[in-house]
Image (cartoon, rainbow, N blue to C red; front, side, top):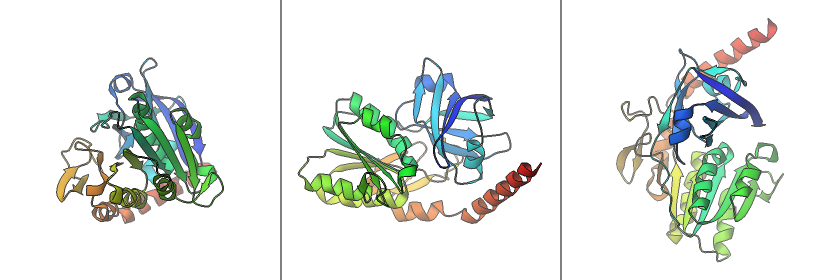
Length: 281
């Protein structure tokens, strides 16, 4: 069992959870993830390690409560426990001094972009961050991203905060200004990552995305997380999760992620019903 040290909501349905996992905390690197099982009868879900404190022996994850398991995880508080955590898994982010590096996070994807932005800064890059959300209330890690950025921008779809528009529009604005960009990391919803790839493609800017397909064991054995990159089948859990954005088949990724929508909806509705019954007792 793994003890939760702290659990705080950063925005609606988005929670930062700090968990005691000393061995993972010592070994994890930017871009890696863990497989979590909330209870012994639960499913395994992959969650990126947003940060760690080796001295305290803790790791942090940021969870958006969308389906049954993530909502169940977000119902946990400090002092509660989680059944299983396996990690660190995946290939760490490739970090070097590219020059000017742009780290883009869309929604909860900012939680994944943040540790890589930290690593890029430590490697000597001039770091620009673009933190996107649908609305002001869903912006997360604003201060943390600013702390590791030479330039930091917030975008909101509805214009309620920062730049009114999408992260791709801000990225295009930076390119059009004549700023030389050497590397782009984009993490967020599939349409957003695909759109970023199309913005950078004509300029030949090296662009990487972190993929989060359906994943069962996180070790490459099940094959559930296969993605198509450069016309070849790769496994996100061991070959990734980061891949060349200009080589990713985003349509295939999107289609595969929809395979169990009906089952996911049924499970979420059952969990909601159980929660309502619990509130009445």
